[in-house]
Length: 233
Image 1 (cartoon, rainbow, N blue to C red):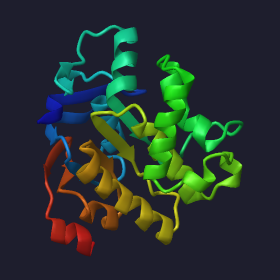
Image 2 (cartoon, rainbow, N blue to C red):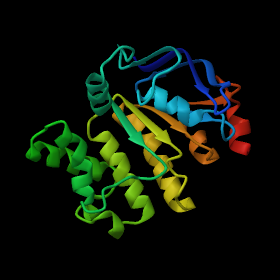
Image 3 (tube, one colour):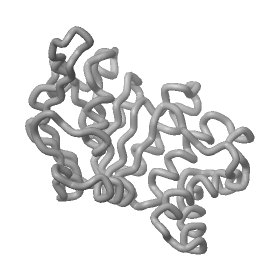
């Protein structure tokens, strides 16, 4: 089952001099449930822009995006917010945890925003923290957690709404080798065991090697990448 689909997606901006800057031009992508897709490419190629379009954080200049079968075009701001909160999990290079709250409270936050009762939110957040190996640390605040623990908390927060799609932008970019590898293993496990469709933008060859498919973004379009070349660097 396809949980994320982009058809002929383009994105352009007007530059400071009034000229049109074409970032994406005819991107096509389909991601199945339980599949992990890595997107690689040069800095400035538009990878983060594409991720924002796939997550309905921005609108394409052309083309369509469907999340779990629902076309995002024409949805009101409230409907888009609801769709993102229920169907999409985001993990960024910086974890964006609220420092005054514990790991557990941070993971509960999306559910509380969705007006899930506190008991249910706590139960589901606890289960996700257990999934990422943070049960002993769930009552610690971000400042009391290591960088790897903070990022795994962010992954648990993204998963707590039981999304159809998980989008990650350089998720291990600020982690050391040990914590990066642990996070990479977690992503591969989530795709396989949780049945989430994952799209990860990365420069990390180790993470890309764990994906089911590796695509390269070049000249505004996605194409198949040679995995052996990506891994070899």
